[in-house]
Length: 159
Image (cartoon, rainbow, N blue to C red; front, side, top):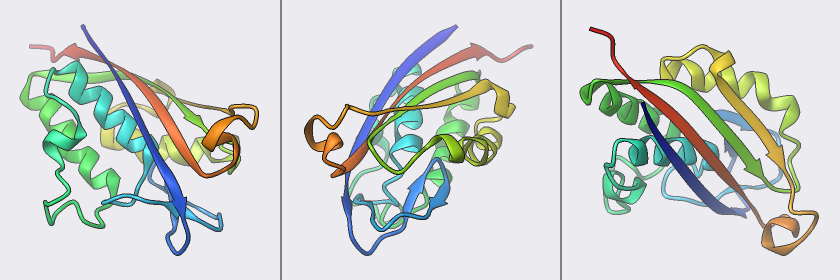
């Protein structure tokens, strides 16, 4: 069994849709980033790459790569999931936490699980999506952006 942890954070910016776990969320601002800025999906990808000892997101998805500019993070996640299979592993469980004061994440959990689980080749019940705040402390507490943490478990492929 392999385990990896991931983290990502992005500031809010006007004029962009907010994407969280592959779901477009009604919110007045989106997250800045070279791709769609989806911190939750980025944290999961970072955790998977860490479990495989393949470096971080910047190693595989460089700012100067045109395929990253404006990309949907869930499409980039498919590339990372293919790496898992190429290394003869499979994702078996993912535990995540979104950190920020707003938007409310709990109502989004079923949609996020249904968006990400198929791309990870797991059932939605093996993807935990939680949320917490910083009790209004710091830049996250001032609603200047969002952060996410992820922990993934990989197991060798059978046979």
